[in-house]
Length: 111
Image (cartoon, rainbow, N blue to C red; front, side, top):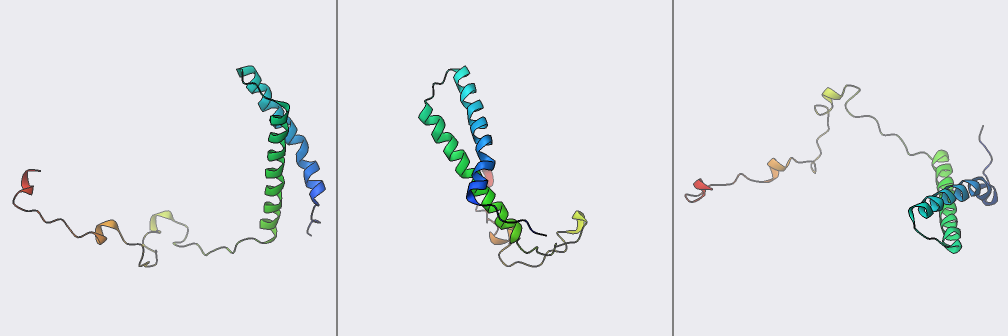
């Protein structure tokens, strides 16, 4: 049974109290440290926090309705055998396999 989608007004009401309290506490702590702040800065901070929380709420609801398909786990459950069960990936080459060994000349012996 799925929930009805919430409207923008309901989401703003849900997050408004948290935004005001969280930013208010932050501004009080900053004031105790000695940082002065204006009312316009407080309002702007609340607006930004509210916008981010509402946007994240929409994003989380979208992800709950449309989950990403789960890829099958590679290697089974035991972590000790996962490297043995890896499929060969041509782009997954060890660095030692890509670089040819350095040839030493007669002058490189003492370096």
